[in-house]
Length: 316
Image (cartoon, rainbow, N blue to C red; front, side, top):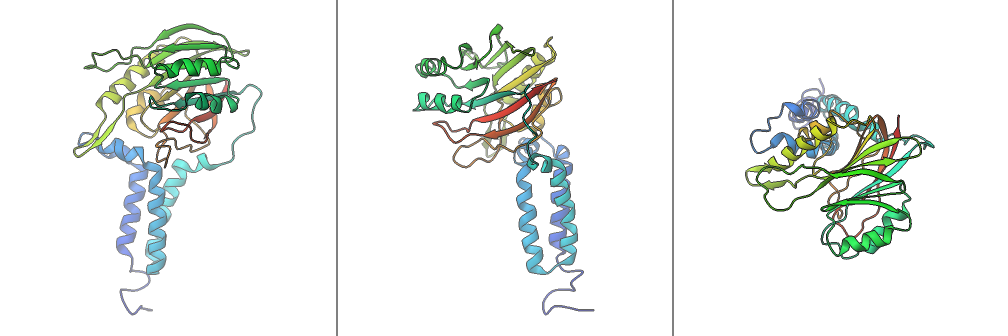
């Protein structure tokens, strides 16, 4: 049997790399088995789950350097698991449909120094709907004035707003405030958009932020608010629903199950949106019921710490 000067045979060397490959595959396939009770470890893993693909690349390079057949074979497992989870997002986008709605979701940041420039950048993308979060005075007036020529219909509740080419009716606030928050806190709205094809219930929401601390992920308020938003969507009487929001979580995060179990998520496009300087995760989401989110992508950075997310939504 051929042996290298150092280490074992070609077949046996790289066992550690092989074990790491199997562990990576297990995390991809069984991430829901990782407990969330200790520091929100499960949600933390799921927030960055696509990045396990980078671990596969690193292990591949090490396996090649080690000339380990065992590790190379083992790497087929996480590679296949990653492709199963995320491969479809990388496929070409479907051809646009005449019935598509183009929507923009953007947390504009309450510290945005150029609200007019941000509004123009969003309008230049030509969407039918624009959902914004972290609207504060006096920037709110700038957004309203800048968007008004192309988007004559708008609804604002608290710090979230919706601008539309089509009439808005039955606008109301959403009570998604978690327990313990006693100050004024209005971060959700629901409106009916009267499109040429059908009436669609559009929800705009901004869930509480999460924090990574020494003890783990602090996300209890975000999780509670996601549950309240999920209840509101479940109670919606209109069949067609679009949710646009900064949900402070990815679609793989189990905390968003009250929403992802009821709504379709994007079929194409990765669109990492936060932080804008070096996007690591897509926490700005477009979801739908009785509609397909066929493709989403990001726009160039504005004055916000989030990137705008654009999506094509095809009502059924």
